[in-house]
Length: 467
Image 1 (tube, rainbow, N blue to C red):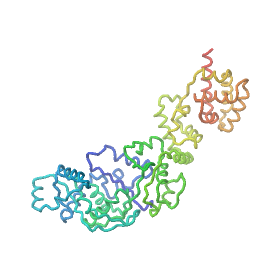
Image 2: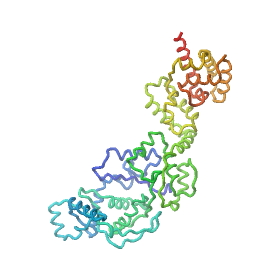
Image 3: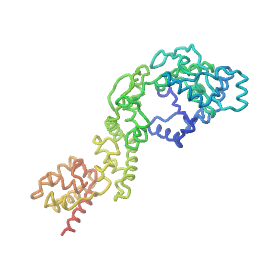
Image 4: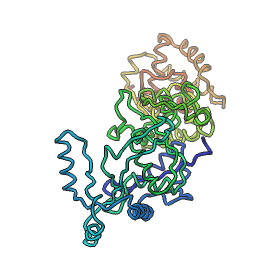
């Protein structure tokens, strides 16, 4: 459907008590990061703006006044105290709370008198029986006689702001929306919205209610799970295409069920609304790392996308290590690109590369004399051999893991009483301060001859201070 649909971002900011400064900008930032920027939005504008509901109050007011004038809606003067009593009585008797439509029966002169007295009021929509069935794109034919189970709903609050029921109908109509795709929790309210369309004399759009995305255990995704915010995934190094892939992978609506690693263009080509099922989708975020690893490999192999990774990693290195970085060359694109290629397939996100396991790539390590001495009595000889090896490889020839693996075996044979295994432990300790990690040859290719030479000269300096 790409190219056929307009992606409109409308911001509901009509509940003043819940407004969060910067929320609208943050949502647009995240959509752009995810690669699905809106075609029309508060920031980008568009033909049918404004896109903040607080800037459309006159449009909602006109619609509400029209409903009142045609007898489809009415002013309700019931106090909050009375509404609370109704709710309490209903719950006490085991019934579902509902408004009793009391103000629907006020005479015109009573209404005028209260309006003249400026009695606080809301506007309620008159629910009528005889709801027409509608054919939902996902759930098929549906019909809910809302008048039998609900009281007349508020469409305009006392503060002059609309409720969702009115705002979504007015906005969709004026923005010429043809199809509404929303969560299945709104399915039961659709008959109410269709009554509003009919009362306003407007043609309704086509509705499709999508099954919910749930946690692996079947519970609802909740804002209280702080780690489900897009910003949280972004900070952890998750790629937007991996999030899109895992989300669509657990759902439906595609012509074929493919494996992991699908790109957005593939998803667009495969999308088929008739394939969407009514079953909720279970999202197993424990598998996100696997999806991310696949998409990370694809990005590393793509020159344009790789540049984005390099910039991202540069920022993370500076944030995590800051002034600990002694050699600014580790922030150079060529160096970071080399590291990414060598670790491709081994890491799940770029954030892995700023963990302590990979700190040696950005910060020169420390180790004790005792650690070295425990491995061999030939530390000075081995350090000298490594420096000589690097001097022989500084002629511009690019190091490879395979080449170095052969060279290291030859080097180990030049020792008197140190086994190959211990030679590798010594080199690993000098380069990284660690006892495990990538192969020694890969570490050396990552760091390059100059840095390796520098680190082994430090080993020799430490030894000389002992004597």
